[in-house]
Amino acid sequence: MSVSCAPVVIITPDADVWEIDTNAYADCGHFVNWDQFPTKAGPRKTSHVEIPQMQKELKKMARDGIWGENRALREQAYNQIIKRINCRIFTPTITVFHDVSERLFGQCGLNDHPLPEFLDGCVMPMYCLNVRGETAVKKILICIGDQYPDITYCPALPAVVALLMHYSEDEAECFERTCRLISCTEPHKTYIEQSFLSYEASNMTFGDLAKKYCQAGHKFITTHCENSSEVFSDWLMWIFGDLPFEYVIRVFDVFLLEGSKVLYRVALALLKQYKLHTEYEGQDIKCDIQEFIKNISNHVCVEKLLEKAFSIRLFSHKEIWLLHMANSKALSKNGITVIQQRQPVHMSVNITNFTSEIVTAHDMRVVWSWIPERYSLYPPVLLFSTLEHGYSLQRFYSHCEGMEPTVLLIKTTANEVCGAYLSTDWNERRKSSGQVSSFFGTGECFVFTIRPDMERYEWVVVKKPEMVKTPPPSPRSRPRSYSHGARLSPTPKRRSLTMTSAPSSPSQSANFLTVPGEGNPSHLSPFLSVRHFQLPSKTASMFMSGNSQGFIIGGGGGQALCVDSDLNNGRTEHCETFDNPPLCEENFHIQHLEVWGCQSS
Image (tube, rainbow, N blue to C red; front, side, top):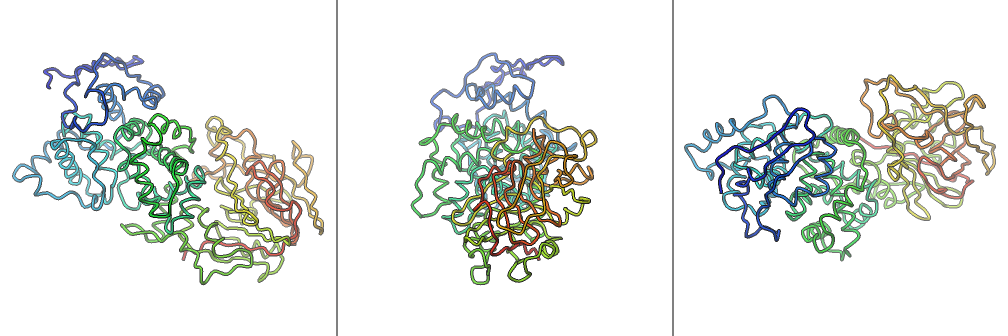
């Protein structure tokens, strides 16, 4: 089918909607093999429709699947959305495609040109495209390789091109749209990873998010798979390789508006559904997940899957970007910049060489699977032990300072074992003056128990994202410190520690813990820095603190862990920061205490 006139698009500067005559796009879809197409309906449905211009309304339309009911509407929506993406100035256009195509294929055929090296070993899903469509996809990929010599690895690109091919009038239009996604310059927003380093950092980022948002699925995989990182490295291809077309195209609708954040959401939802609906029989968990996703329609409809995905309230685009950057930096430091397999996380803890007075090597492997991916690359190294260094708080600080992060392990005289992952250098406590000790750390901190049961308690904001209100004001407009905290009193040398909650005003006592302010606003914030969140109560962000009288992990209504200056006595309670139960007997005596760091060199 063909049309003789240009598409009719009426957009006025003050209009609230785009008025679209979808009949004008009736020739799109000639790259599709309709006999293989999964929908029962015909190839198109045409009508006069309106697309909202406001981003919020457009996002709602995409999430609600309105475009799925009208192919022509989706075609034009894609066109408008992609045109609005901020790109590099010299992003290749339709004209560039014609020039490059003539230069590459004018004298020789398509078969004389191999696919770009950055696609070596990558899956090439074609989503019911006909022969003409498949040829067009390969041609576009070759032209992209010509125009983007800096791309070194890009496994998602074939799927993106194939999906856009469904809703493009010709190869040139599909090429231009893809190039705009590749060349996006919008802050903290990414569409397509373009190097192995970036791709692997995204895999680590997904692993980190799975630890926080799908703990059951993460635990299941790390328990049943020798190399869990290899399984999590498939997360992107779960979507752009295994999902059926009628599912992936719905994801793609939102992806064009929201970027890669929606891919993390959907992959987490898939992992949750896999854990919910399958009974693993001990074969190949990687293949088992792939088969589950390929047959996802037997378990959950696309609407329900997306509902589950959008109910996962991830951190902001900026927070995910910061985590991705941190993972990328760790990989570079570890020498992983080209295609190579990462060492399995569990291999970081050497069974034969690991020695601890508190945990077994197996226990430590579990703990190491909990910590952020960028640190689990490295083996644990013992920094402090009461058996070796004595029961001295000063020696505890001196051996831990300069190390970030650290893992605290405590074994009580009742043989209970608990601990904490601490994201920040203990040297930060020195920024306090006098007897007032500041809380510091980030939302990556967590507390845990090992014996009698293994449980991990993340920052309460991970479990209750509704606590976060509107985005915080600029650094210049906010106070530099807060006065809420918990009392860190000298602890009597007996089993029972006397602790009280902080009064509403710091003037009532000289021994209050305060939450630190902004610091240098020009310094790049760490992932899950408290200053990125506006919380109703500062007691939800009391991670770690210490002075000459002892140290506290977690605050607000109680302390998750509080240890005295002699490292002999401790107390554990429910606290608002981690929303944890007592980690062991509430008033406990310490048998052994150890601190472990990451051996990065």
